[in-house]
Length: 332
Ligand code: KG4
Ligand code: ZN
Image 1 (cartoon, rainbow, N blue to C red):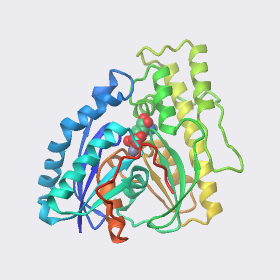
Image 2: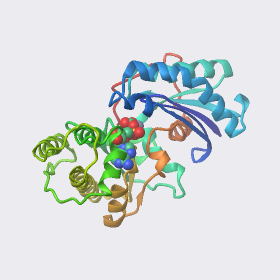
Image 3: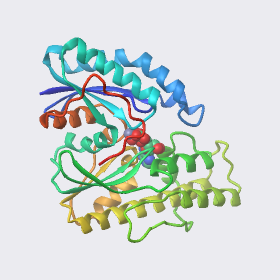
């Protein structure tokens, strides 16, 4: 079964065709990163207007790359939350229009669940029960998954998401936007010499990153590092210390939860899962197998939406024409 996936929840317009939930036939992404970088973050009105411009060409490209036409598709899967309302509306309305025109089932997809499904697009099939760590710009969730469609959110961030902390710290250090790749790049030149606080929240599966972020901002001020772009070695050391602190907490807490829940595997998902130190550390330290999507499938894409859509379709879960956007949608 070939499913067309559509994703427009944040600042990437994406369309993809995936066969049987696992094989990518096409995966097209138009990123708005450059457009938003001059503002130091995403401007929602600019994002939705850009989605409108990009959506149809991206869709046509995805069908062309996959060498399929409407008659080859079994369903249309689209992200309907969480995300920016105006951005989500573009993808959902496009999906509705073509599902109606092509007489295909429509499937509404939770963006966070879709991130987990990026792991079904790799070489190894994930084994249940598993613990998924979703680390993106808006979320940091620890999820127990016992089967397709059976997800329980065990923990979440109580304040900043991990990716959000990367973005804010990068801004304070003058390293640019998006912050995750900028911090990672700067850290390569630095040494994690500064002791920064780690919020363990013992006995809970929750996270907290705002104390760490504030400590970094204060340290940067003490060291005279300005938020104006001018990379220097002090900023590189602070970036490396921050990255080390985030990775320590994410890895230690995820492994503790996996052990406590008797998980077979750990899955990473979301933009921060592209971080090399996180990937390398969790694989090295975990006693159970860790699956991590390839780099381009960690950040927002529509292949993960199509994969997730396949498993919903198998379960007979299709949406009605009243499918609406749910900007605050949660997992489980
Ligand atoms: O999943 P995603 O593409 O979009 C959301 O759903 O939020 O995640 C974007 C987040 C941003 O905060 C970005 O700074 C972070 O992922 N990110 C990274 C890296 N690449 C992207 N964080 C750390 N290291 C990276 N290499
Ligand atoms: Zn995402």
